[in-house]
Length: 521
Image (cartoon, rainbow, N blue to C red; front, side):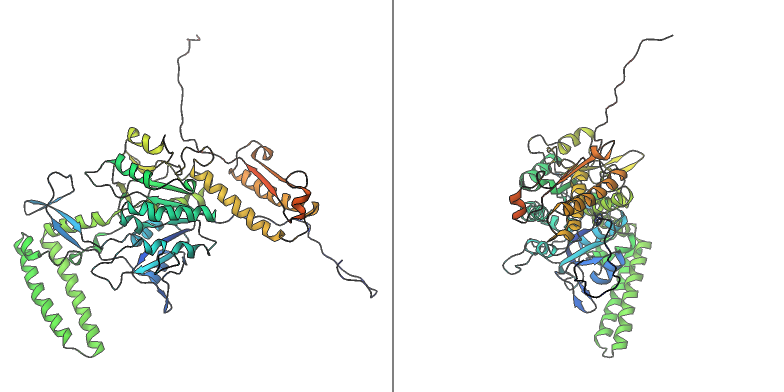
């Protein structure tokens, strides 16, 4: 008893009978970094502020909607294979305008559609006031002289995120590999509590898969490869619905009156052009706020009616919008995989490989990969930089058909679930043992700490996270003088703990051997 007893009486002293418990930390809380329409909550700016969300409705409330990308019509190059559509007997292709690409909004939708849950958003800039387009800059992600604190440095102060996803970075092309992706891997490796999900550049119809993958492997470097995984190819999704695309997605240079062959459609265009001029003139002459608001509603209704009239009278117009929607629906796979990680972690556990799982709101991969085509992607003999493939199977649909980290030749860190399971164990034990800092470095504390870690690992073993027929085969915890510490270590204030775990590994290759036997009767 700490106090000195001087007054006669009965005193009660309570002692803890059980050690503290270690609780498993969250394993699938992604941090998305990119550009948003707005970044504001309760009148306060959220730019460069990591913001926790639990639903897509919260995202829209604080960060707005997607960018209204605009497209032009172009003549296809006969030497280059491309997806075209028929416009009055002539093959045309839709081409997105420069500075009109933004992937974060639709990626967030894809994330929640595939089982996503709590996440963090770090807005590096807004495009709500830039209808003509905006620049995507590497400095917005990794910092510069004008922005000395990067989003990755801001995330260092947040303990909850466990995944890092940057969908907008791939708009920079292969330059993002050396400038942004390497910085993300360094961030995850230094934090030791995060895992990066990376994309490869979008493959065009005339490009070769081997070239795209080789460029990625060359430029990604060799540092902290076990803290990241890459996925290929892009996905043809159904995230963008038909009602989200209209004539306002067409560039001003596209003259509907000229290009639409249907006479009824040309009449609709003529009437709308005359009506819109009248409405715009009436709006310019108003001063009363209520009248201005009502006139803007009239303008919006006129646009909506014009769009519906064109769809009803012009199959060409409908085909054009469908081509635009198809282009907008081709998205990088990282956000979908973040949702898959969340889904698998919540239903099976982080020790289950996030593979052989179907994707929601995904029609097909943008590139069809065969067994032979996947061999060099899954196994990189030279550098071990595995690229996980998403493949479509007849009668099944798109499946995640790979579960390796970028360090694919490492026996320790080859598999994503092994890396992420150990991250979970490390961080859980780290937080639990924090309570024993400055406790007496003696046998009583050692026994308590060892019991706490043992109990935690036994529970994981029962859930199937650790391999072994008995707990002693699944893990080993050592602590104490003569086991992990010397007398000098104790004088230096060090409590050294050694934990060994046998984490389950996925059955990536199943080989069944058949042979005939002699007739028995």
